[in-house]
Image (cartoon, rainbow, N blue to C red; front, side, top):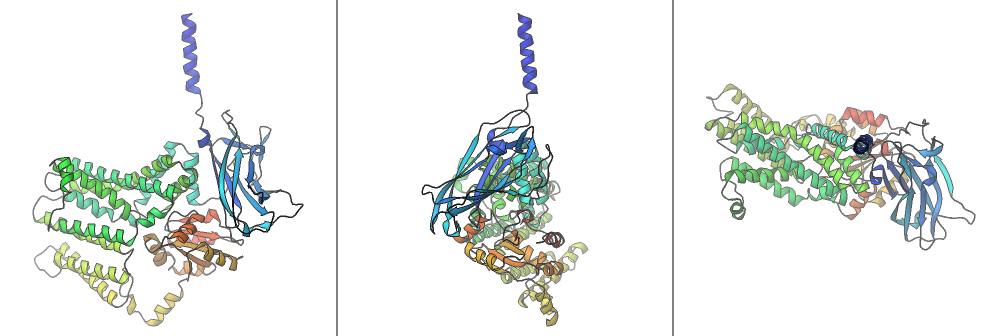
Length: 595
């Protein structure tokens, strides 16, 4: 008897260990539905790896209490035969065209019910599932149904697929990243977004964090060891990661308003003032301390006060100095916005921010390890980081202040710094004197260029070129027609129907948008190719109700995002660009768009 029990337990453990891990229904199937500008319902069911849907179990229903709005036709992808049944092996998308039974023009609130059932290749079949969406249909855009009209079913052209191959479709980088979260394991998600974070750490937007973390480490003064520098750097990066995660999840759940809110002028001025105060502290004018009630709660431990200050600076600098929305972040936000799975999206963003912070940890540890001993050099190092803090303050002001004033501030800062380094002193080191002289020459050129009307930090004396050359340079730049509402955009799309259209989502507070304008769009080859497109720019600087509606319609969580439209004024989703792109890559991208 005992031997049978042991054998039973052994077999149970063995079988349990070999049992495949099945996905929960909300992981295997992720439905989504929305209205497009033509008042068509675009519905899809994202399915995970090794999951398929039965074609005859997919039902699309419109429920209207007044029985005014009905389905006219349904465009669906072709199914394939799999183990004797017609199924969808890849995520199917459907376009439901609506019609009305009478000549009504008001907004009709209808319910759209999406029902489906599928199985796992590992042998598990899920129970029938459904989800209902509440939609506001503008009936003025619908055609009137005839008395004999019936629902038509149209096949969406797809590539031929074998019984085991999924149908491959071209998708944009953002959608591909969103699909990585949908279909990948949590380990793959974390590794992928960690890699994205390392790449984002190389973007110009993260550079201002280097003087911040270096200045914080340097300001710890005597007794700073490599171990302590590592600890403080990790605290900074973890605080930064928490900020990105919270901001990303909130943006995903509540829309793109959070990013714009953090770029309001009064917030930018406030944080710029904070960095000016930090710079003055580095210069030795005063010592920044936490509020007395906070010190009392923490005790007089300098260690605790230092950790608190580092954590606060990491959190705040991430919100303001962090990069503009790029493809990895947008991909996570697309997934969160569609599924409401804030946890997995938040985990992905946390992994990405840790990847971004890893180089900053190296910078922080280096600042602690190679910090000079107390003395004259320490004063020099503190002052250098103080100047860098002032540079961060000016860099932030570029988002809300005219370029004339920021260039003037840069020139004055660099002139002062070059004089401090000893540009005209005799008894200083050759290398230091050379750096000081180069800075002085550049800063004077920048000052002259600013006063002469130049707007380029890299070419401040460009205004001295002959007027003919200047005119030809401007002639190569493309002109955008600006819109800020759905109505304005729809009018332009209708007017230019049949043409190639490029829509650029931009804002004055978006740093990467300025890079697009000054670097990519200014390239001669790019500008020439852009001449083949109707150029429209969605200006969402104000972030009012109409700007939010425009962004939400196209799933834009924050600029820069560039959309392309086909001859039917439909978005070519696979060609969407999120984040900055260099001229060469952008030109290659434009060459792939053919009508």
